[in-house]
Length: 262
Image (cartoon, rainbow, N blue to C red; front, side):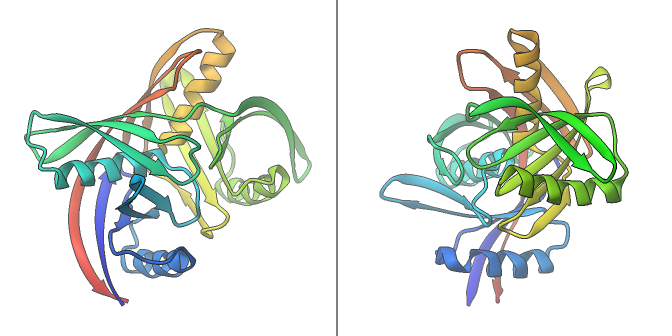
């Protein structure tokens, strides 16, 4: 089959967005093939417009903030946005109960700035996890389409990759991130396991994980938090408030649009 897709760079979290209409049952197979052809890609989503408006469905059914900003940038470009202009794109996103609003502005250099109204967390709890002989008491920030563990400190790479699979099963989550947070130095290192998509990546940046880290800090502080976190691929900023949806700030560059035969 012929597939049209975009390759986008939101803060280094390389994202493929398929524009060709395909059946949901084919998402994983198509995502696997495209990611094999684009080894720098960390995730794949499927975009379009139906009777309910613009949509983004991730290959594993998870929620993804960077992909949401990427999809909004594509739709803004299709609407003919010009440098210096701003527009609101409303998306129905997999793993999100309510539509996600992204305010997109176009830069002179061809990139886009996005401000996404992220979903409110379903819960912020402390859970106990075991890995080998160690027990960890860790905060878990749960969204509808993904959960994140906030881990203040570090873990051996191989151990972390084994632990996230075990802990995802213990939580009964379809998608889990471990956000290794160094708040003192403003650094976040994201590891994300999408069980249903069969992918595990040390991501260059993670928008929902950044949001989770901000929500956890706001919960801990009992007030609003505005924090920017440096990640391997760039910086993401989150404003987490008690009585409103968190705001996630990031940038997106549309690297290319391509057609391939799969």
